[in-house]
Length: 119
Figure 1 (tube, helix red, strand yellow):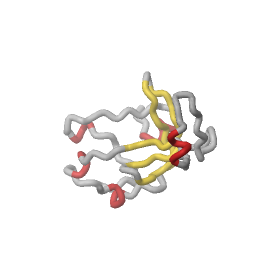
Figure 2 (cartoon, one colour):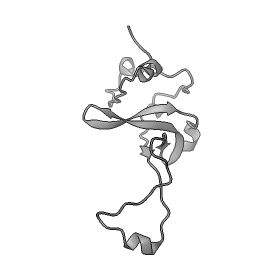
Figure 3 (cartoon, one colour):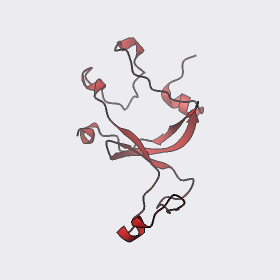
Figure 4 (cartoon, rainbow, N blue to C red):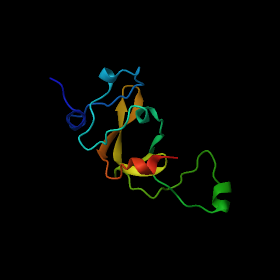
């Protein structure tokens, strides 16, 4: 039985995205809220990052940082992390293990706006 992406994620499944060979049959099913993109635009690369948190430090504190330094971040342990595309926040996720690599499990995608993502 085929499961859609949301069902797979809800069941704890891993999402692995591979570079497609270009045929339409191999493309993953689109989300009902995903806009229909022209084929040409589907290949535009974007950078997806997961932001753990940030810290504001003075230059003096920065110069004192060494290999054993611990710098507290502004995020609480266990809270969802921010998903960013080309630096723009689009949602929240948590870190998971996908095989031998880290992955992210999407919690929500409230800010996915393709107009913002163009460089």
